[in-house]
Length: 273
Image (cartoon, rainbow, N blue to C red):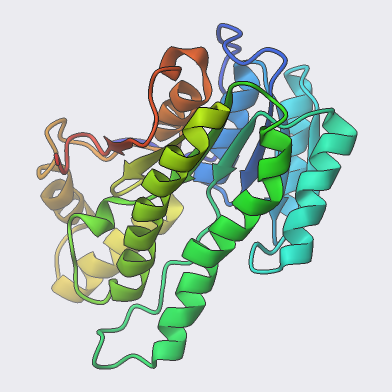
């Protein structure tokens, strides 16, 4: 069984991103943290934007321990002024912007469509779709100053593997998937590559809690619940956010120079489109 991400610290890898500066939105204990650390481990300086500062400050210390620079900007991506402030501070304090990783998200209302107030769906779209595009629009002028910049959307397997009570989340992310292709088409002539990664279940504290909850509800063991999900994957396990972060490094690096407008499933073979 894969471990949680709490003690993850990457070793310094090849300098695929030496001299690059990345903005990462949404810093939780999983994906945002591990994406930031992985990019820094490959040579990038990092500007982090999230609604709370405590975790960002800890991750910043870890990044600085690698010899990279890091800044933390309290950011709500539904606030246009906050998005512009994050972009501006990254340029002013770190000198440039090469990479934007749109990781901030809302996981929706966990209700069926019939049970939902559509204002709850709108709130989810405000973060996952409009908020993501708002931050992208704020950062874009700085990305266009480079001749090979990257926008990476963190999307989800949920737009392909539809489940009940995830309608608001899945619909907002499906809209983002179409916008990703639109941006790739429009920005490609200007040297901006736009791609997405689509994780499935991401092993960490929230999924561990959810599996324990299911086990309690169903009168089963945690290991049985885990095995049910893991056995749906080709690799028979649930990847951690640290492993998934490697796909972000790939899209941010010269290794993906000829790739744009693509959606990469990073889910241990849980879903193959």
